Length: 178
Picture 1 (tube, rainbow, N blue to C red):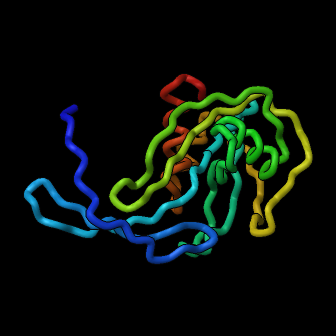
Picture 2: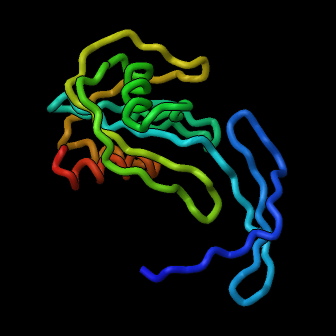
């Protein structure tokens, strides 16, 4: 892969902050000497959990007000300060589904939507699930669904769908975990 010099940032401006993300722009000098504003939104890191009972994959169904649709998706959430993706994944799985994993491993860590977002995501695989107490956030109204492993990717691809669910299942399948 060719290496590119970092483009000089002439100005970095935060235009707004919400409880969820920060937005702004960087005015940069491009390789031809011209200047351009590149707008961004910065979100905290998130984790997506591919959790299996051995025969089934756990999904949560939830309404997404941003796009006004109900999705069947993998459990997911924000990585808290000081947490690794695996620690956050185990916590989110317990909170959202009421299952405590015996083991959690990182499948992939990556940047999302790099044209506009400053957002890291980790996909983790969880197994050895034991029932425990759910602890939903005040804005989580989730229904748990168990889907046979052989049907999980097909179900995830049904509309409406989202990137994190498809990516998580494809990575787990590629690694021979599903």
